Image 1: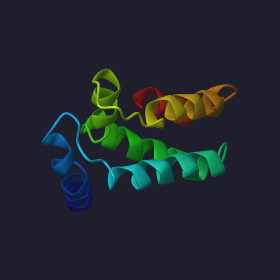
Image 2 (image 1 turned 90 degrees about the vertical axis):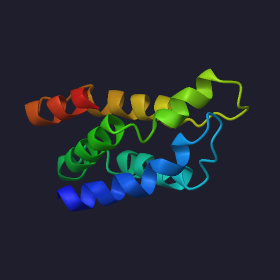
Image 3 (image 1 turned 45 degrees about the horizontal axis):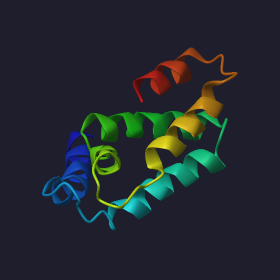
Image 4 (image 1 turned 180 degrees about the vertical axis):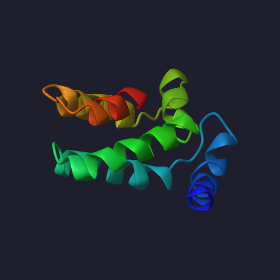
Length: 108
């Protein structure tokens, strides 16, 4: 698990940390895919729980920090990832009674 996590972080993180208005054309499809999975499998715990753990890992390692910094800067680019993720997570935990899923969503 450590090796695969390290490889994923190495693939996703470095190119986007070089400049404030980085080219995120490779990160956009990845973020869109994660959101599509969360949207498609909403309320399916066996899919959503590992996805939440993956999102926690990615967010904890700063993979998607570039989206937040680009919204704050005048880069002329805004990706809906942060807002859409928050909206989908809100729907996911709104009537959830599963403590494991609730704890995983709190971490994200």
